Image (tube, rainbow, N blue to C red):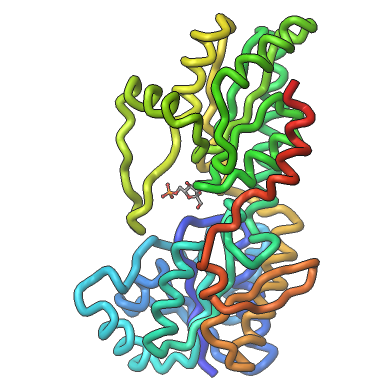
Length: 347
Ligand code: F6P
């Protein structure tokens, strides 16, 4: 079998572990592995690279993706569907293994519907793909965000400041919640739960009254405050909604608005830090390397068994596969039972 491998969407730690595992499993089964550069765009441009044991040597610990990635969708260009089918037939791919997040899974499903043999591997630091307990990249991002909270603690304590850390996650608060619990945050603000700014003010003041002259607030980039307050904040800042290449709203910056507002309402020195792409870069954690490797090996088995239009997933530590339609049917947002655990510490 001839298998094309592509990475699509934002990069994340663990992608190279998946690519390595796919190539090694193909080698074991006698399949041909072809790397496709820059996501779906690589098929359009016929940007292919033959993969063998040497091309994936020494990459399990490397961040990013050796194949490159993009947020390109063949279905958004003129005659894209026709072109895609033609290119796949021309190269005689028997299957495509697509490693991507929620946006990319929609493309994989569209490709499947026009008869392309696609298998999906879920990736994202956001951990928001439905049907899988975890995506690789998440554990690394949580580790980085937790370290950032630890570092902010020392400055917060020394200067008696309120420190806000803004983390990624789009419309899901997983990174904020996990790093907030691990880093001992005093409040965690997530998109799944509307928060009143005055609730945060109350926690900061309570802490002050019992002698804690600093506070750590973790805020997810997609956090929502009670509508009126948020729109007021946005109006003040002049922030406009920009779109990414998938047409989704680009997030980031809410922490600066919140910092101003908290400083006004509490009178305490407040600073915001946006962790940004630091969360997505660099060395993957051991957990993400193992998960990526398990997904990679399993995805080749899926191709062998012709399980197309499906995505591998992990549930209760077992690797399984589910229809891509299930994965894209909704976002996997935060389990509010876990949020309740974090809330115990908002005092
Ligand atoms: O989906 C991963 C992610 O890192 C989100 O957490 C973030 O909102 C988004 O991608 C940023 O993507 P980019 O700036 O690369 O378009």
